[in-house]
Length: 302
Image 1 (cartoon, rainbow, N blue to C red):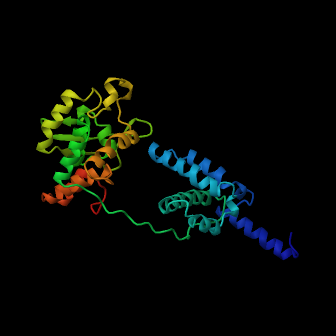
Image 2 (image 1 turned 120 degrees about the vertical axis):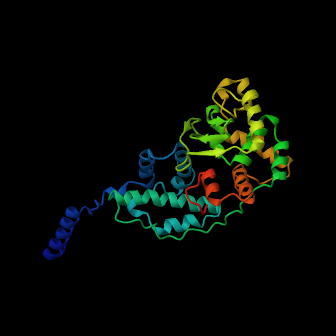
Image 3 (image 1 turned 120 degrees about the horizontal axis):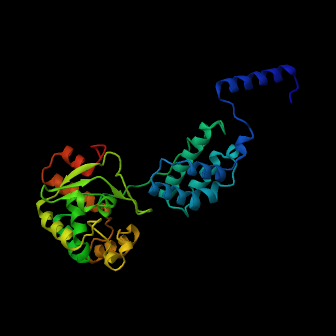
């Protein structure tokens, strides 16, 4: 209601303009809670890879919903974000990444005209210190490969000298290893959540030269340890054929981390073997553009 008819007329004109231009926001639409809208948002993200979807669902369940889930969209304020970002019970990394995800969700609500603006858009995010890149020398890589179960030694050496991503190695099919020509064709990767083969990351379809030192090792791998579908199977595959794929979390916990401790390389990540390949190529004088193509990086600065 309005005290004056002129005020009511002006309000009505504003609403008509908003309706005509598609900028009208129904006050009732913003009453949906952040949690309700977040579930709707995640269900509609059919463009996400299964691993990314699983990551987002975990962040929603563990962080966003407990802190923001019951707040109506139209009552969500920057103050709520500030209180969340100073919660030291959550790591700085998780606070920053989950807030970035929440911003995406609220931006979608704005795009759907459920609320007029994203009040979290300009909230300052905490700074995170990036860890220094870890990579190995030839001798360290040899020490690591000698510390691992011999069944997985070719996998470690291929990671350290060919630079494939973990999913690309775990999903590598024998038909894509051409020892006669000396190339590995990277055309798929293993999804860690669904254990299904999927296309690799964008710009990652590529052909990688096999270093001469790996030819004999991979030949033995294909003859003695590979299966019809996998160059690098799970060691248990001979006892339980259904377990052919290597499961990422089990492999890191049971195989990779213990080998790093034995080799005195505690703190190394499996992705560090990919960095190792890049550094070895660079040290050998390989052109930086060729390194970019071998690693499947979109940006040469990476």
